[in-house]
Image 1 (cartoon, rainbow, N blue to C red):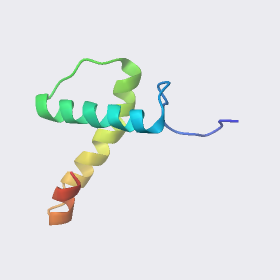
Image 2 (image 1 turned 90 degrees about the vertical axis):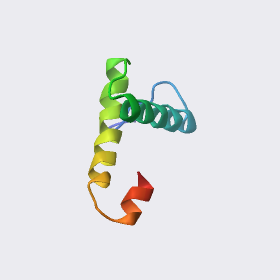
Image 3 (image 1 turned 180 degrees about the horizontal axis):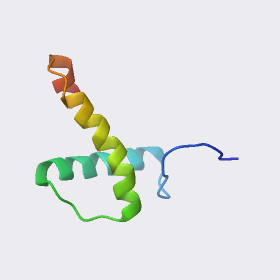
Image 4 (image 1 turned 120 degrees about the vertical axis):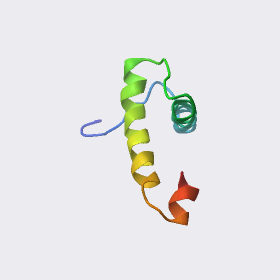
Amino acid sequence: MRHQKSGRRFNRDTNARKALMRNLCTSLLESGRITTTEAKAKELRRWVERLITTAKDQDLSARRRV
């Protein structure tokens, strides 16, 4: 059973999901606004919030991670 599992699957395997989120993050950060579905936007929000939190650190490793 799939109880208490976080994240959406979007009918894709793991690598395709990661690639989708990476590309959406990149597009959002470069252009500031993107058009996508509501479900993808909600999942993307989790990824972008983590990136923003990491980017706030003022050290070299944080810049490399972002």
